[in-house]
Image 1 (tube, rainbow, N blue to C red):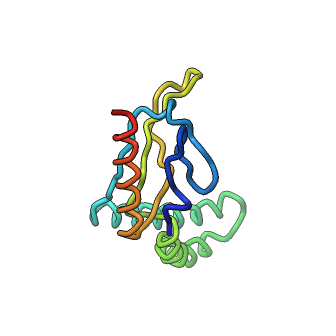
Image 2 (cartoon, rainbow, N blue to C red):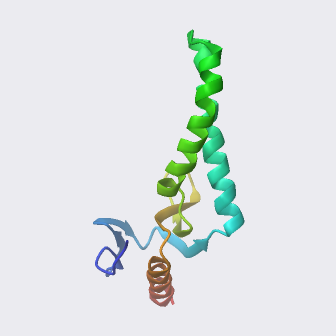
Length: 132
């Protein structure tokens, strides 16, 4: 859970959990909300990834039947771990890098809480007021 003490805009940087990003490097800022369909697809993809790792065991000399039994277990485990990994709301910034990386969108804060989404929106509003 984020608070306004954890994530805020100071005079020259965006500070998140004590780490700052210079406002001069930020080109744009937005709050992204994943739809329910996207969240479910992320859960399924994460679960399939987890279960597919078990199918590599026979390559390393394990019994193929072991993969057959462990694959559903790892699918369920991946689905449960998805609750900790997959977030619905994201605060993203478009960063202008000084090297050949160029410009890219970076997710700087993630959460499932609606209150955090409101804080993210306030940060975006403050940033838009700062650049205008």
